[in-house]
Image (spheres, rainbow, N blue to C red):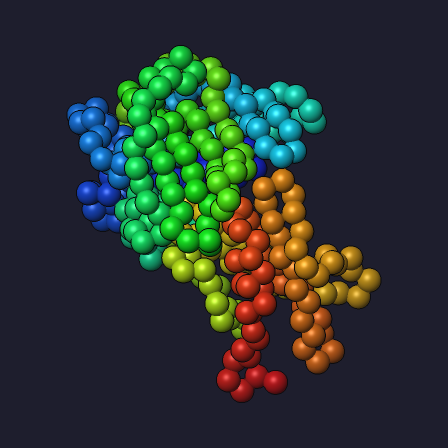
Length: 323
């Protein structure tokens, strides 16, 4: 949240990075959090989103939160720290099964073409992707977790992505409440901090992630949702098994993963069609190429019709001269 927080703990923050869009982030070695010390109060919805991107990386804090979705209500303990330019996030569920998610890492560079596929791209990459696909508006002030906030609405302009509502701390810009909104206007998920210890600004630079390269694959997409782009994956992200091809696509706020693997004999495979787990959907397709069967899976918090069209449009294009 997110956050963007770790993907399974808060689904928006893990899409965000930090660093001002006005700065030439790709030319630097990292993001200087001390620039927030002299930053003025944002005036526009875009400025507030930019401030929130900064805050998600640059403030260290401890918090309690609640996550409300179709599969129930869960409470969490959250923490965000920075040590020697490397971030560490922990989200621990306090009820139900004792699940803990932890992430350590750096930030992707500022160029949209260079943004690392951890979902931690710098704001220049994120903000550049939003134009034409989302509309940002401010919608008054209120209080969350005992702190004054401003509400930012992020409306989808088509049926290929969900909308978001953010309640941003007026002092720091940290998102204290997030709501994901479906195509029909229904609330799909709410993530809200209930207690927040006083955040402290990291007094240094958060390092950039080394650039990763996109591995080659004979599979190509005939169709992708407008605004979504393939992101290179860092070495420690996703599936590393040689037979499995993994791609990550993002429009800056929403994202989905694509997995393609050959089906092995006696391997259990997913049923073809659409699957749902909470607010996450997975579209599955099986393709036979000669004696081999491939399983194609697109999964993410994206409208199911978009995922289904992606998997149906995947085609095998062998290299020239290959049999």
